[in-house]
Image (cartoon, rainbow, N blue to C red; front, side, top):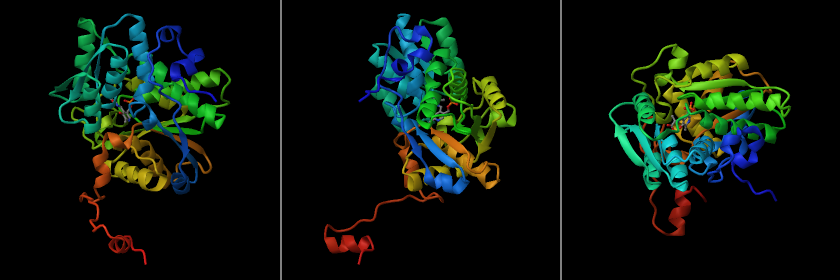
Length: 355
Ligand code: F0G
């Protein structure tokens, strides 16, 4: 049997050489491509989920962090820094400590999910809550990396994109070709840039006969690319993509236009409805931001814009356990609490409605 060795070894032929000389890996990648019958039924397409919550720290960031930290290690770096809405910090902290490096993270005050905060702290990061939003954190992290001996591991670092592009390779390796449409959430716009790069490179290498249309979805309250201007005060319950001025804005537009795709927004209500459908009907638990791709596909299907019979892959970017409280709330915002019973079989059977 083939034992998965992490994305750098698996896809070394498609990566720049400087990423392969000092490999720091936690075994990332090789994530499941899961059919989503409930979404296929709702859309008339054939829909698969690329379940990135199955990575070592529970999000797609690990693909780009194995490459960014490997490159930093090869250059002899002792410390790295990132700005983050949570997942990048969890991933950077894990890979940095594995490599014996110090990791500093800047997060927006009060706006990161508890699971991600715990991960960064558990992995020993020097975590600073910044009085500001993600965009403010990224500006500060870039300046810090310019003026001090720390390397920036946000997705403006091209080594990050190289790692994240392997998500496309895995999709093609499983399906035997590229899908017709690839949908995903858009925040800082690194991932849509990376997936598009991956699809183009695999096509050029003869591994696929086509490239997909890239469909990116922002949360409505944080949808600068859709609106055409930065948002000073982005707001959404999907904290992972609460970003008002994406660093890879131009590259996201290029991915959209050269792929014949689109970038649209979905409301928090649509995100939470898709979040619920994914967990309750498909059996895949994701964090709210990760449901934006599915929410977008459902929105466009309802408007008759999803071609019948198309093959669609949706990247669900992070695990539901990152931010689990959303599952314990009804659509109208009431708390869901378990039914209490005494420990006898009759009352248990009654509570279950068994006769
Ligand atoms: N989904 C999740 C769960 C994320 O954490 C992010 C970004 C995205 C989608 C959007 O990806 O930025 O490449 O467009 N999280 C970053 C972070 C910003 O700091 O963890 P993107």
